[in-house]
Length: 621
Image 1 (cartoon, one colour):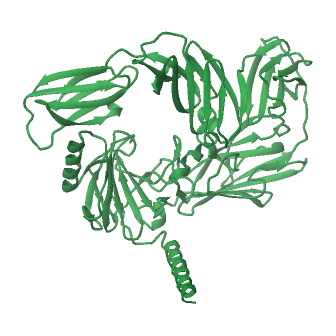
Image 2 (cartoon, helix red, strand yellow; image 1 turned 90 degrees about the vertical axis):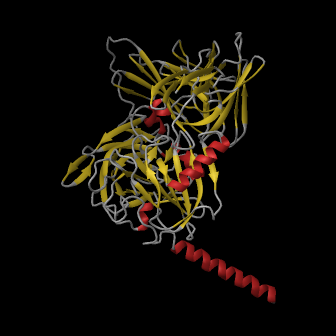
Image 3 (tube, helix red, strand yellow; image 1 turned 180 degrees about the vertical axis):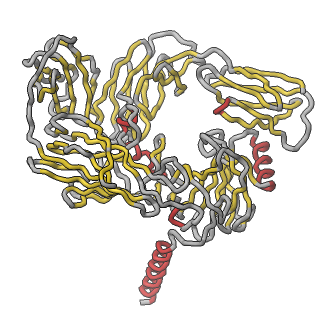
């Protein structure tokens, strides 16, 4: 009986603690604003923005092109971590608070005097610029409003500002604007820019065509509309480009909530409440990735695509997909909110339209064939092909033929579901289409595909969805997949080289639009193994040219490398190691002595690139 009472007491305490934690997830008046507290501030970024390959995890607070604005501790606590890196957050400081929250202050130019002294000592002890320091809770205790750092432009920052985060006890990045900061004001409604409608099944159409189509929005009576009625049939996916602007600034920011209604019934809801760092890769399947890669910007999908496991949605059984199976008029309503509950809506008039094959109108222009894969559906479009043209698909076991699914002006459009018969070869009439399809790779499984010249290994977390693998190897290059398809996790590739290389200087590079970026890897005899998180073209290249070093005055040097990139950089004053601060964006290092002494004697700079080429520069100061 006693043990049962004890168990009941523990459960009760746990429930009370959990309830208290939930109620105080966003405590008001607990934190002060980190820059100019009590004065109006302005933002260049908010939580949940679609950045390169991640959701933005906090606020970017403007400093209007200036550095060295005092950064104030938002509440009492202690510094638990300091990280210095040429990339990412640059110089960043992490403060733990009694509430269980953690605040993060990134891209700092410098820290307060005692913290800066400690960091410099650690850099000299480890003999490196980039350090990641975990601190005990007794080393640096801070009080609310205490100046702990100064704003800057370090790391991957694209201009002076403070990146600021508030995390909970589970290290989830919360929305800082939910904590009641009066320094930020917003009475501006969010805005729609454009929408995308995509066919998600073989028999789906947008205005009697298959593919992805863009529609711009217009004002009408103070509301946003798509002015022309859109004809839809089948299963359709909606994506939107919408942004918010805050009072007093013109730059775009994130949307807080999206709701989609079909004929007055809610079919999709998206909440931008927090950012879970372990789910950052899902941004690439949440947004319309292929549109982004083709230069169309970053758009929110308003449906849950295959492989998307984000915790940000509420949907019906169709996962937010638009289903039209009739010829009746319908209405789509998109509603968006910003973090201050300013609201806008977009009305899209649509009408069901039965499939219609259309008619072919040939002209005297040259024949042209294009192919595009939409999820599971391969679309082959041929302009000025005869009406009786046939698409022939050959797998290892059978051959299949199909005629055009529909005609549009002078184009014949063929649609093929890759799940019905995966083709190793594709012919249009007698023309072989050089698509290099290899094999359908399942998602959520470990899988290795072997060819004569290459081996590709996928782990169970590499793919969001089934991949119809395309691969071509030639002269120690490999072209794998399409750059418009995202990977969730890395894949491993082993190439067998037929050439003779200086293996110590030869490595793998990603080649895109004439630019080669170092990837690296390892040699094992004539085989080279590397890993990557992006599809595209890769090539083995040799780099025998060492980095360049140039003194530009005032303890500053430029360091550059032609191909493989900088791996390490060190400086010595009269034989003793001395710190170099590195800014990769401008290829510059700056001497940073341990004390404010005048430098006198021999300075030696050593720079090594990623394949071991080394250069040394000596200077008498």
